[in-house]
Image 1 (cartoon, rainbow, N blue to C red):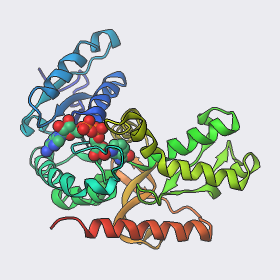
Image 2: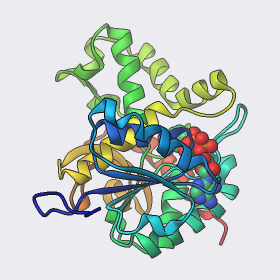
Image 3: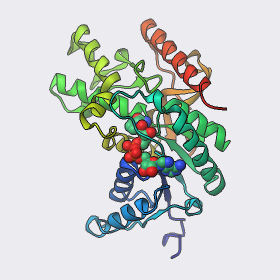
Length: 317
Ligand code: TXD
């Protein structure tokens, strides 16, 4: 089949590396939103192929025109526009994200080689945990420019913050504007000073003590889901967050999204990936936005940066 649309434009292609809980949900969302043809890659024989076949039976009902294939061969990633990486182990109850470092690092090295070889011009969105270390490793191993390798965490963590605030105030989450900075760990920084309900400071609605409780819940929200599910971690919300980033790239929407991006002095931090507000467009991470923070938030961000550096330093050579 021609890989061109009638307009002569090349059809968009999304490669999902990891066909597990998040990967399968990513594939479904890609079909529903018709973001492009989808290829699911996984190392487990039959898993990507089975999910692709099942999803291809949903496409007619969804009136979706995209194609969906499953593969165990990296060659099928050829010329993907976007690669979303969820390959790796997920947490089980009692595990920290950092506990996944060693095993997922080995996986990430093989994934990065596949991407570098077969999708050398793609925009790479890393989801695998521990996120800040995995996105660092993926960029190092692919050798892609930093603006073309980004981590998904902040969109999810900010959505959790918005959901809890909306529930507390009794408004739709769509009216809450909030973002979370820093590493994707227990020291992430919900930025209260920049959080509003349609432009009205959140402190107008919720007392400081209660806000602190909500922000603590945001930091632990991933663990809360893991403890309930017992067999794995969250997957609907991470997939939804990653698709938001992919769509902003593919459609050049230039959305301002909190993503794990490479800092080169912004926020006074240099040489690591960490969650900050960025503009995502056809150039990938097109600009890092430096928000004004309180002294407390700045201090918390530096603590989080320190934890990210420790994790990155622990990456196997
Ligand atoms: O906000 C975030 N970034 C986090 C990320 C939110 C939630 C989950 N987070 C992490 O995403 C989680 O800790 C895991 O590291 C990844 C994927 O989570 P998911 O829930 O999708 O895990 P699954 O269902 O176990 O799927 C992982 C798939 C599975 O099918 C494996 O066979 C596959 O990864 N896998 C591989 N694919 C390709 N290549 C290799 N080497 C490989 N090894 C395993």
